[in-house]
Length: 274
Image (cartoon, rainbow, N blue to C red; front, side):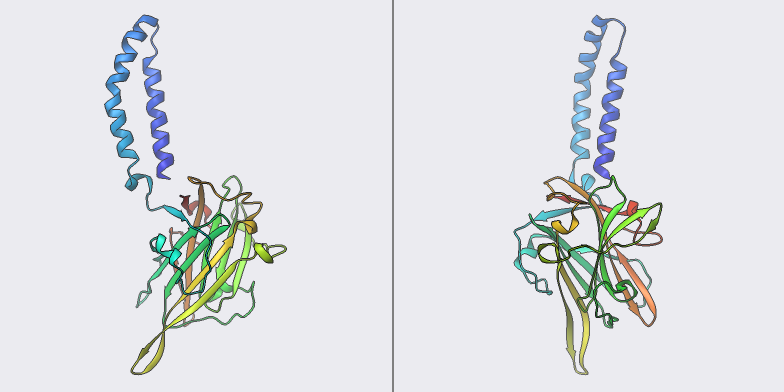
């Protein structure tokens, strides 16, 4: 990440200064290092000012997640809380004759994290009616959250246009992964989710224009991956995706690009909690 690279460079600058300032004679060190240090101050200040501009710190792999008060979702994204943050483009990675725009928003509160997806589409492929089905085989949005990078275990959530869900924990050991269903998935540990289908009316009748997915993931569900709510300035890794199946072919969208599959956790971006 950009911040890590900047801090690493700063560390090298300081180490280089200390190394060059070591001379055998203490008097010479006092005479040489202090003037040399003060001569370096303008350059150091310029570097810090340049390095910590928003365009450098918050590169394309980092999202600033705004904190909000808890709110009710309706599957349309109409709650005023969503005006606190901007849309994020979810890039289409597959070639299609007619590109379909996909965008998302993310917020968080003391109790959990909110997602909103807006998916343009003119044909829905969504036949599953039961939760924990193989939703990735049809139209779906997916999010991955990797709060603790000390362990290659992360959370995956999928939601179909029919409001059917798939929440699972993924241990990914040496690129071998399998999903585990949550235990005691009830009450305040359960994801709140709603979807809606947008229709447009033409002279030939009504047709599909797209669909919206809105959901709230409680931090309690992520325990023990998350032992407490994220603090301001804390970083998680994550990615989010869309799959669209039309006429037996599948198109893919993602926030951060992946080469083979959605489980490439080292390609995840960074979520910076504000």
